[in-house]
Amino acid sequence: AGIILVSLNGNFVLKLNPAGDLLAVGAAFAWAVYSILQKKIQPFGYSVVALTRKCFFYGLLFMIPFMIGMGFHPDMTALMKPLVLLPILYLGLGASAICYATWNFALHALGPVKVSVYIYLIPFVGIVFAAIILHEKITWAALVGVGLILAGLYLSENSFGKAKTGTEPAPVPVPVEEDSSDSM
Image (cartoon, rainbow, N blue to C red):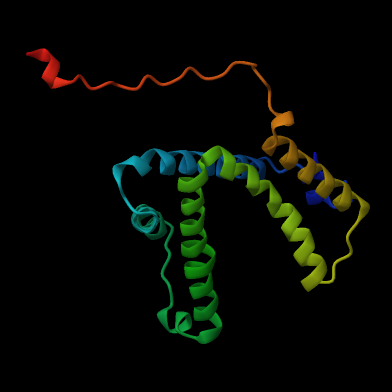
């Protein structure tokens, strides 16, 4: 509810676009699968940077046939202009490589479920930066939405928001080594 309020920001005009809605749901599903697979690959001993590099390599490799099929032919002279090259470098290195690497570090440290909870802070951060940088007005809907988002995060991270079973986990048995001197 909080994310919906923040996203709509007081403009409750709903225009349904099935293609866009399906793409958004598909992107969320793909991100969930990516996060879970990253955690499952961790025991194989790859470093986070190596995993991120491999994901980018295979992503580009599988994207090339689609680019060719869609008739993509980049103009290399236009790509070398600083007005075009600098934003591409920022998106490729900053918004992609560094962000994926830090996401993967967090996945390995905290796990996919705990890290995914914090993705709900994106609308909150967006509102704060829109107010600071773009001087956008913060509406009542955005404030209520932020309150709901923060309350949801608090509930998901604190024990009183989690179901209590009242049972302790079973103790793990510790193997006892036999004394070899007694066997004679």
